[in-house]
Image 1 (cartoon, one colour):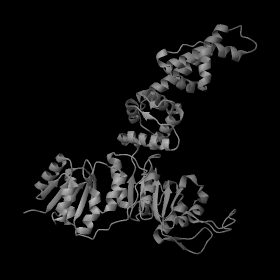
Image 2 (cartoon, helix red, strand yellow):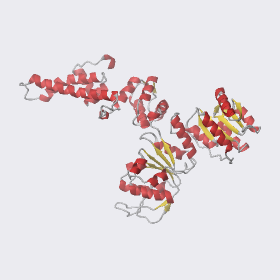
Image 3 (tube, helix red, strand yellow):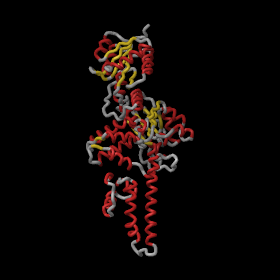
Length: 491
């Protein structure tokens, strides 16, 4: 006995076949088509209990059919799938009224479970939301981790649930918060952001809740707090883990009761604000240490979103680089491109500063280098510059081979300098000049020291200048004046 008929539309024959076979084994009848026109004819004819459609097809967009299906057959659910796994696609799918959106590639077992759920759940009248422009999407990337974030954002934009965004510094937590507001039902109201780590502890309550005239020294007039400013919109509490305990208590009361009083005030003020918080800290650990209220954590952590570090989504780096280059051009920077080897080197980097570090690097290339195409050698140079000498690991047992090598280079340079100075004194013992000792020592020691530095950096003059603490032009002049040889292949 058939469990129901599923209409499948995808221009990829292999995908149609795989889906038909998987659902057929579960007792479903499947009708498959390679275009939107055939699917629409079936739907108009009253066929099918569920629709699975690709977004992009040769004769149209599968999402364009969803509102028409909702009007003609409101109880017919639609599952959309797409290889164009961007936030814009996820948002448009959610706005069109699909039952679920699946980015390709997807797990067949998960699809079968989704079909079961779609056909078993009681039918409800669909709600068609007002279309929202998805231009200027702030989130970039097609990795599985980002696809999951897109799906979460698309599901949450029309809700008022509190969201807690976690992730390392520079991963883009505020971008996710802005997307939740920009594409949600509160988008016409204010998005107000406050960074807890950037405000003195004794001013946080005043910043959040406002204060009355005379509430404290220097309060010469009434001031509106961020909660009032965000009324009807979204309040983004960045670095919530840095909020002092007394402010945590007041914030919890606002979340529980929906009202607050200003500092020095007595009249309760009611506000309608959606709270989105973010932190790079481990709040669970702060709770164990008694530095963060557990009840506040559960109020904020209704829906958690974790933003992965860039090293965990390296496949997104080429897309991010292109985005930053295009953005730079729009702001007047010259057009650039990265060759394949350069992009691969960027993908291999660990990016401790995450997306923010990559953005800064790309903009530096666009602003400072004359080459139209950025190659491997330039990328290596900039990445070398971005690693401070102080980052050499203190424990050699846990250091990587690269880090140990860098530390040995610094040690060898220091040893070389000391050796040359001692050699000078040994050679001139008993007949040291009465004046100009520094100048004479520098003249005789500087040449071998610079030469040793160039050898240690394999002729990289930029890196050598940094190690020596010299301006690059000063180093070049000294190399010329002192006739110091530089390996030709590395000049």
